[in-house]
Length: 280
Image 1 (spheres, rainbow, N blue to C red):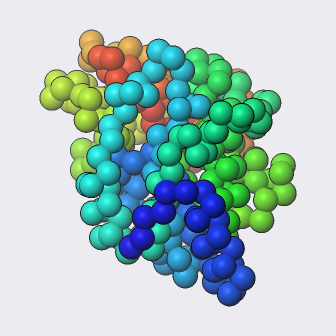
Image 2: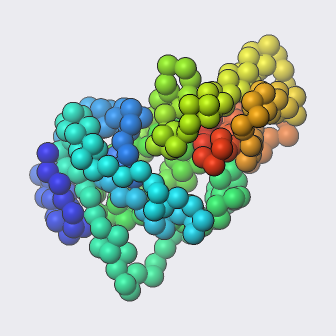
């Protein structure tokens, strides 16, 4: 496994491999690798001749009041996990190399960024798609893998690939959960034991919604009310949003049309967690 720090060296390696007819898979991350990331790496290894893991905590997608400086970083642990998944290249760039002093071009997202997390974080997805496009240009992947836990991010990347005619396959990967149902996240480590227990109400509320659909409930308001009630059974949860929406457009549904995306964001103490499921 090789660590590459400069965009030029990474791009030269990628172009050489492409010129030899070899396939590259990319898993873009901000580090703090967990089982969710590892599931992407294992699938990426299966899909391509070469597997590239990028680790970069992207400052462009953090608002001034968010946890950029506190975001968990542990390169040594990440490298051990990467090696266990047989990663070929770890691309570990510095911010000054991706965003030099004269950097001034970003990628705007019009409609998809207006929903879900974009309502509270208006500049977030501009930062996400800008860095993802840069990574695509540098690493030159044939396929890139993204987890469905960050569903809005996945949809926006898919839209960018479509709208900008990028010759890249986007491979969505299912949410990986703990045995008790909690979606695995780098931010789970911020939770106290009591807060972690309270966070289980998120996956329980998603399961509650699916049960209602299975029982024939078609009223969107009734489903959202039941989800909210399940979350509020613990006093430690503060809801940011609960949305039942179209999985492609992300527009809210007034009448249930399946499949539908149920997306949740909430605060457990000071930690913001997101989760979702496709109701079928």
